[in-house]
Length: 99
Image (cartoon, rainbow, N blue to C red; front, top):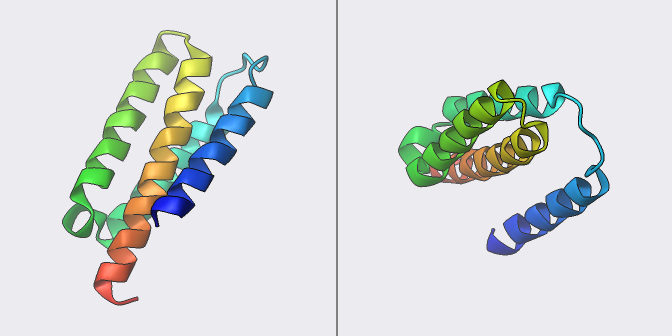
């Protein structure tokens, strides 16, 4: 899974590089991160992938703080990171749960 995560991070970095001029509020990215965290929790990530899940929650909280301060690019980056971490936590939980 390490290689898949590295590929996901690379895709996100490329996407961020292309979106560097986008200064709008990252509404969709925030929503996607929240939904993925909910999916990870439902899959059992707090028990089966606690470190990844906790880090995803921390990144989302940081994204929310950045959003409140009007730092939209930072909020977008953190939300994308939170979503990627939550997705990995969900997958680890699914594997651990036998799905």
